[in-house]
Image (cartoon, rainbow, N blue to C red):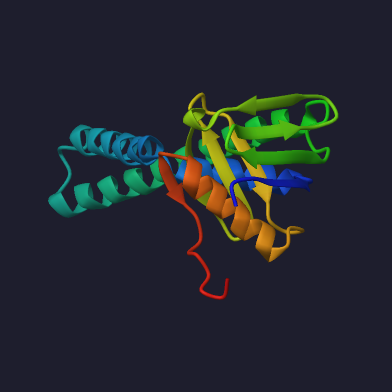
Length: 177
């Protein structure tokens, strides 16, 4: 099974969820959350050096948790605006036809068509509702699974596993096949 063609329609929620999961899979983003929060919490402890050790521990914890929440809100806002830009583009939520073949991943909509060889696709991952591929330039192709038959989803997984040389995290191969 080296080729599979199918058509899907993405929703706003699909785009938003794909961007959130892509960010959560990024070690750099998670490091930014942790390091930035630790840095600000460390500053909070240093400027309160006249407090007791227990008070400074509480200050550290409160500053750390506050910064994690602040960073999460900022990141969610950025993801929302990026998703909004995608879904408001002409044809952004129109049906999209995919063809995954030995030549690469091709996508075609009413407004655009393109194909990119497998060497350009560095990773793929799967959530409960989506399969997402990531291009080396940061482009994501979002494949909602909601209306795809199980055999088509299995073939998509097979083609991605066979052709993407980077990190591929897809559901386990079902024994029933």
